[in-house]
Image (cartoon, rainbow, N blue to C red; front, side, top):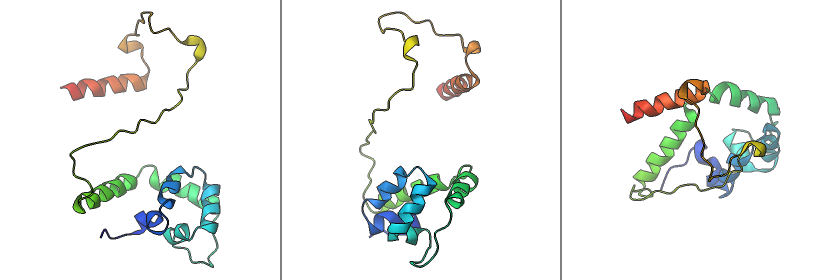
Length: 141
């Protein structure tokens, strides 16, 4: 049996809570969930009678505490390690999320696939693209 801690609280109480936690995109919605879902209260260390903090508390925590932290990576790696230890993950196969994401493109500037395209020179690319190209070159050795 895998020991549960607060990082897996949603899944421990309600099989879908863990999945819902990742899809809540607003702090106001988090506060609404805490009002009706005991698993969220437990995760936030709130008793049944405790007052729910203002949404700005969650916003501040997200922006100040977690953005520059490696906490989410450490939680993920911990879950993977526990899964390996419990024999749930073996490394023989992998899966890929093939979700379709609508591209944010300018439809008036598109080029048909059968027409040649001249790529801009690396020096003319944006800083982010140049940085990416340097990282690719470094990875190739």
